[in-house]
Length: 382
Image (tube, rainbow, N blue to C red; front, side, top):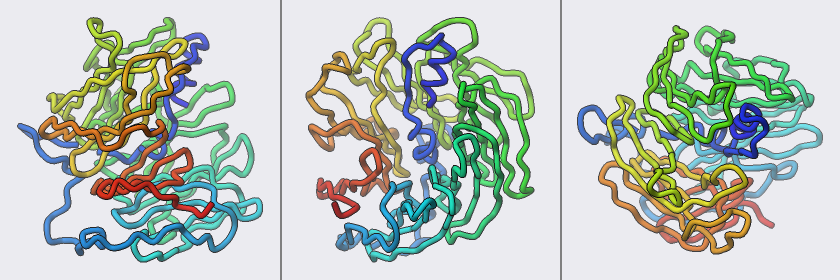
């Protein structure tokens, strides 16, 4: 959707950045206070949690036995063991959690209307459920991990994007779109149960801190491939430029990732990882695939162990003609170590568990990658 928006603002240029990144990935994270440091929101205090079954190599219990209805899609991870999935039941939907080690299914949400998406908060303690009773209306419901409702709002819109505040999960941003891609933005306050309209230049933003946003300012007048990265307080209309000539941006807790194309290496995409106070942590260059008027951004994700995962083509080419498969790479953002984890995979959406031991994979997240055994298994029986 983000590139559809960018396409509209660039006089209908053919740009499409993946909406899964806003919804499913909206819960990714990094931190650095003075030197390289572990990401705060990815850290757990030692000794506070039970040792997970995965530590002992416990067998994964798949495929899931669907109890009612037909499988729609997997949504996200709640923790290292539990995933969320949606089933179609009649004209409505059910939402379940599933423990991949115990095989426990738990129904946590029922709707008489179709569930369009489920987005977990960064901690996995809350879920945003978007149901679509009609084409031009959505119901946004926030529940806890057991299905207890916290807040619900009905909004007239054709589509939505959401951005949890990883520094304060009582706050999130919501952008709603009309069919012509005009947008409105809202701040959702779960503690006060309020939905407040706010004015933003762009619908796709990230949280730099508890009260500060970052975004790419594409402007209204020119058809550009690059834009300045800006920051602003949610309480002020003033903004400041952080970086120039950025093609794509993703902000997660204590980390801002930017992508650009260097003028001296036009066949590569340059990924730069910055702390929230804008100190450089790491960088990564990979070949890119060109499209009619832009470049393909392969699917990616982060885990809580300071690792970034992305698909990468073997060489630069045109996206329409490239057929050599993709490597799945990992980058340790703390020390810059790069690894090739898999060869010859398809570039499909990726969502990794907090500890990075397993990843959901596929356009419906219908496959599970075991990063240790290198096995890829179906989540649902075919």
